Length: 470
Image (tube, rainbow, N blue to C red; front, side):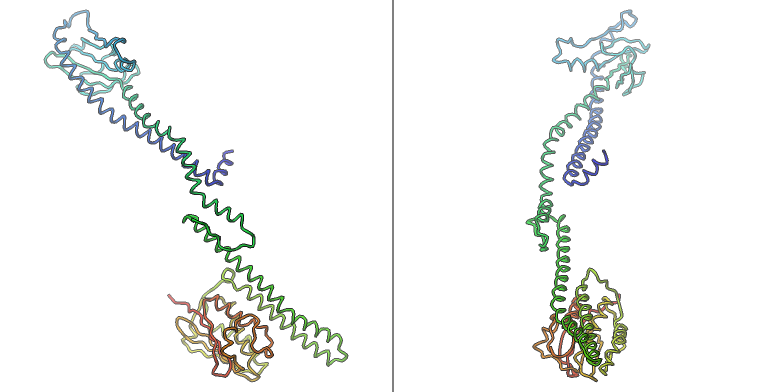
């Protein structure tokens, strides 16, 4: 039962705050009551001690003459002085306090001469001057003692400590009661304030509940407290990432449906031609075309899937040296370059060989492969391709040049569009290579530029931020 109650309190911020603050308030009031009582007792002790000593001196002066007329050997001692009659007291409180204050006069022979009606049967104190404490019949007394040198008698004036304790309690109660009386009103006000403070959280909940599943726009509240701002910002960031992921999936689906239609039809046509071929030569030619079509579809799917994965949330980045990566990619593409009897050259000075970049090995490998493959595709047989690495601090410049037909400057802006190919009748790509390169460059916070190559073809310049060494 207790565990269930704890769980319910923790699951409700409103209930937790109300119960927590109310409990704190009660503890705070109790602490004030305790501290007030202690402080009141201290102050009352000082005040009553001063009054007790003052009253003792007055009594000594008033009763001194009476002691001088007493026959101290009389059998009618002690003389008892009673206080006011009940009828003469304004209230019962005065009678109560009168019974709690008493005095005694003893001579040097320890004989009681004069006493008040409220005094106990025992002597208050020994022959010790000043203040003392004594317990008589389970009642604690505060006693002040004086000695009269003129008439040789001891005066003991006692005051029951219950008076002091009761007075301190009454003072503490008077401090406590206003707080307790205001507690219900404070609880109502506290509930109102907490609900008002949690109103933005309720608005956020309503906003999310009413939101269409397809609505991934940023949440906007009229007034967003700074405590809820991180939650709203995190949700908006999540919506942005979800929207980006959904957009990539939608683009992948649309791109695949758009671009695969033609190559699949071609593959189907070559397969039918191979099946309908009447001789081996026609069949082999059809199968060769079929193989080329399948490779194109496979390459297209690979590019589409790679484009859909270019996301900062899914791809880790590390510090890597770029020059060895270039050598690795060039070795991988050596066969395709040799098939067209082309020449691929890597130019890099010693300083540039040591440059590090912060990036994804997987994506940068794809970037280099697509740059080289694009240059290979549009360069003629026995053409020339040059890859250069240059230190353009704070960037590493990757320059790929080819000896192909080149691209008119007015078409540079469209080279990174998906499925765009200026030379539609040349090359066998789908027009996704440079679009993929642009996505990878953006992922690395880099830049891409196009220009005319000194070799006669296209020059693609990619700038990647260097990794600063500490």
